[in-house]
Length: 283
Image (cartoon, rainbow, N blue to C red; front, side, top):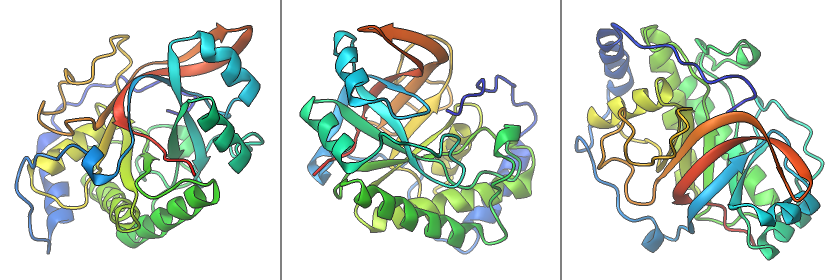
């Protein structure tokens, strides 16, 4: 999701290591039902968007979004907070911007780029590693994610998406630490009335979390945003996810990235997404 190419490395021989990592993460916890089926999020208060979205490093101006009304896109992913955010300067990202987006009937996918896995593959993210107390660190960053969302006038039952860049699953202690952080973040965001979403590479964090789900691990994401840059915008054909998992209305597929697109005379560098998932609820 950052401005680097999605990793296309293939995972081989990782199953044993992942099992060990999951055992570490699960230790002391009571397992949930394996392969739990999640309900439709709409009766739980979610606002679901179905359609096309793009994400871009800097939140575009309202004038640019108005020009992009000529496109098929009606949702935009914005990097609203997090210490790992590549585009920390966001001059357009204000309460007025949020309300302007709402008035134009665009939807927002809020992305939080917090601490990253100690075995993250993106060299630009190695400066913000998860520390020695990953679960409590995840909780602290989840608290921050909610506070920053509220400061931008987002209401409870909004979805907030944790961005975890691709990491090395074969490094078992690192994988366990990463999963612990993710779970802490999810628990805190959920406890404060928001839907915790999760973005990662299909062959990394998404595979990892799906394996955790099958193992009965608690505190997993409510929504799955998977990156597989195959140019095919399919939501329920992803090989790393069971078809019954994160269904219904709980998936986003980032199917192509880092491309220049122009609509209404305004050019943006974007990642392309197909969406059937909760979005922000703006006051």
